[in-house]
Length: 270
Image (cartoon, rainbow, N blue to C red; front, side):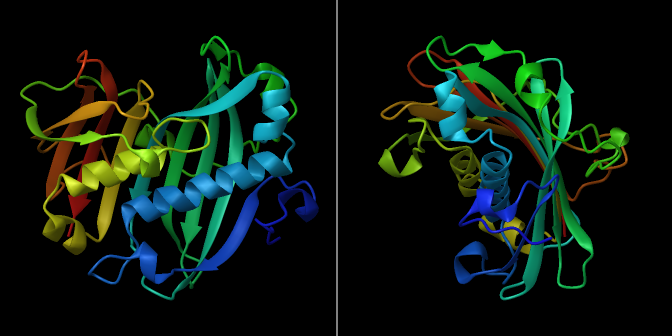
């Protein structure tokens, strides 16, 4: 069933959140196709709406002193839908692993073919102590959606990323008002925009297939400056990673103390 993002609770409790939307002008690049940062934005909104629908939205969580924090995300793009194409965005919880609450996502094109698949790992954090809590107390009351996997086990979605060697500084960004979200830190989609801006735009525009993995390691607050680093990576094994036309690893470090704020890897095929 289609869900109403303007009134998530009015949609009736659903195991899988489902929206149908056209790709707007602000979601494309010069290639006339959906951008990676827009994909992250669609998934963020779907996750927030579904949490509201399931009774674990920000207000309900805040009443118990808890907060959702996105920790890891893997996105596989097999095709980038075009401007004005009507797409279907779906999202659903997939239980938990240790401290992580797992949520999957999918985008289908106008022909109902799955063109984007993703998996995310969320932490439930104590608002005051800023420490992760065990997710069972929240996840026990949510649908498990057993067998409904956006990514195969072999894809190793939402896994931890290792620190890379030989990283080279490519620039830096200062966290400003427009980067922040309701929680007062830099929004997860902004990290994607920072990474995209560090690459040659021509590579992004001509890439039709992508894999992007990111680990959010430490929150970035307003006024903090993050140094951006990257290094090319080549010919890695695995069914989803082998023989990418272009591949890079990224890391963002807080300038004042060198603390890693995020790590990411991006692979692109023309």
